[in-house]
Image (cartoon, rainbow, N blue to C red; front, side, top):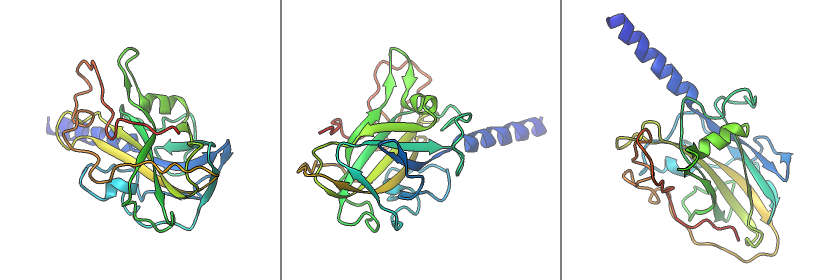
Length: 237
């Protein structure tokens, strides 16, 4: 009996690890930028402490890399997630292991995207949570699209350096406090254009609470309404 439970625990642990993932690549107007301006996390393990500064750009993400991708305001931007480093195969789920939850994308205007610590204000530009009619999560859309999530960079954004923060919140174990898993990466971009918009935002940590209804939730019970964490407004320009 002991051997059975030991084997079961091992398999469960292995399944969980395989379900982990990272945002790795960036596309701009259909052009693959690979990882040239991505602060790739050191592993595919999640952040679970909503009070940690790791929530900004993942573990070790407080320091930048030299890459800076140029993006015109109004461009189509696509972030790309996969479970393992450099595995871009569409045959594999972007985030597996029944890691259901929302996908949220934030921007932060910064003086220098290659050195900024992610301690400024972040505003939402895209999100997908849970559709109570179709019983479909944002992560399922991500898997259906080979790990790609596209959004339009607001056309009236003020030019300058920005960080993109792409995030999935996996809720498969979120029925108890601290069970939600946060997967995020930051991308370093320089926005061109003549816009003037500088939206206000939220801080990380600070934007989320461990007891927020979209973070502390039993997704295996009937869900009549799902509130995506963070600010309610999505800035589209």
